[in-house]
Image (tube, rainbow, N blue to C red):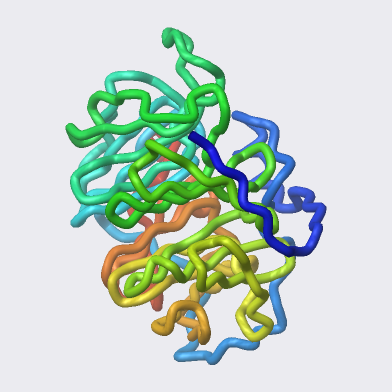
Length: 314
């Protein structure tokens, strides 16, 4: 069951301007909706402390050529990084080579977890009999097997977030925001500005932070309406933890908000804008180019954890 909810909002035409993001997204679907910001803001956020602006190469950095497909999204559980890729869901444990988790090689675009349940979206693999847009897929065995939840053939979510039975996703074709309060049994399609990424405030899921090419948008009614946050930095990606919300700026700056997106502190810097971001507690993980970097101090400093396609580089 699908409901459409109309709200007042700005009409925004967005064009992919970041080459790395455009290549990543266009490789699997035609994106005409929300796009990442193209230039840094005038840095209205407070600066907590300076950063060198580059991650360090750690002695335990893993180099691998086993991941050949695009990486679309990241998730973090404990010390394990989960990767939504063109060739299924993978995991990388600290100090180990990445391993494929999903039995099917489907194109995992959106990826998130609620409790012990994994949620994903994307496109079918070559050996799957399924519509080109997979809607919401559900796994209750750690991502090994997946069942079709809802919206198959109707939408491909390139971003998914969840708290309990509440799930919100951004459609890849138009940036439209979808919402379900019962894990996908019934959906409401929200007429909001095209979003590129979103996060749910940890203390109150009715507060939603969305990123757009024109700046950060904030909703206090569960995504039914959004208002711009003029004092927020220009963010491309956001990720919520129990402590607050992390954001990655168009220039690679990492920000943190402890008050549901009202105020942002500048924490550190990446070498360039990441194409994926996830966080848990003080741990922050990002995909920058073909390297997965991680921070254990709340985004202040980063080191390389996984270098993709470099197993034979030395």
